[in-house]
Length: 531
Image 1: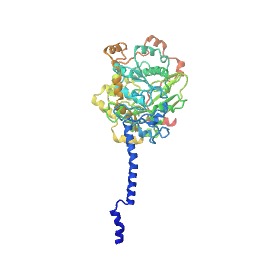
Image 2: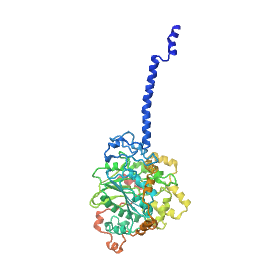
Image 3: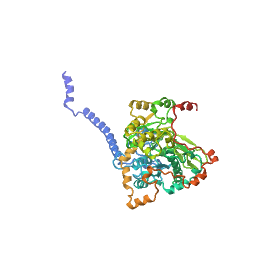
Image 4: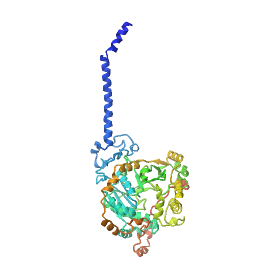
């Protein structure tokens, strides 16, 4: 025992022994080696979050390979810094600061100039206000659209709105003036048959013709601006470029083979979960998938649950929208497609990308459609105004029901407030969650982009305001919302009558314009199986 005590006593009484010192030193070294990289990582994260540094990789990147904040390319890309998929990043880093910080852009207006290829333009016909147009426009700027051709009337044509739009780089505003209507009245479209079944009808039919005439003019503008691709979108539609190596329409179209003339984006439809939505782009994340992106068994097997007593699977159209390559003899083929006077376009349909359609996303959409159309609220008369059955039903309800009855109808037919049904259809893949547009638009708003655009726009003096009103026709005035122009093609009516519109040879050559079409119904399942 004494020997044992003698052996251990020095260990307790002499803490500075060589063995103890060596162990303590090694522990400190390991601690420092662990702490140092963690500290550096934390500092780098804070700097990037605050927008204080620029990714060195972008300095080495060629002009055509711009990456957007929070839109890292996949592991297949040479510029990739992470093995995370695009769905996991989903633009979460975009604009986390209260001041505009877009290190990947030339300035806060997202003006790409000539550095981005391919050059993509979007054309639209709209009467919306800035609260809808600006988020729609800048979202598409973020994903690679360079130019916009806006055919405006109603609220969009008012001086306080149009001056803001005109101040944005890459935006051309076209007003529905008498001069424009006279120019469009001379369009070759009026001498052909592919659109003739839509002529001289009110409301949606009139809009469809107007959109086609505007698209025809936009093709010329796109060619003059050296565009590579053109899309026609409404201001309640956003392109969702899923399937690309980065969340970018530019990248998506860059990968399209050169022999492809037209790219079809199947549409997904917004599925709102509340009746008090004010800003659909920022508040809606649930969408119903298109038939083209679903297994047939799943689509038809859950059809009854998906429809919920409505006339069809979608509330409105289901045949998507298309992008066309700018080339000789290109023409519109209705608002949903493009065609060519000299050949049948070579088209492909995308398997993942989609156009997100925010239809009836706000309760006020019921009454706004009612106020734009002068049809009688009867089952027979609404057929003159609307092509799709749900639009007809919604118009009748909005024209005949009380506010309370409209709310009840809206909940039964539009709002998804049945939790169990939502879970079931989400699991089946009928419904899906898409957050990218919401995150991008919320981030743009928080970064001050929209407010900066509005603040920097030139102000109109009272004299210029009055001059701008006098120099335009009634279709530019705000009152045009309830009194749409029906003069297109009727200038010099004798000419329109003499044309007889129809020419049998052209009818054989040109197919009928593609209207908004409903998705397949249950009665189509056997037909589709046989095809």
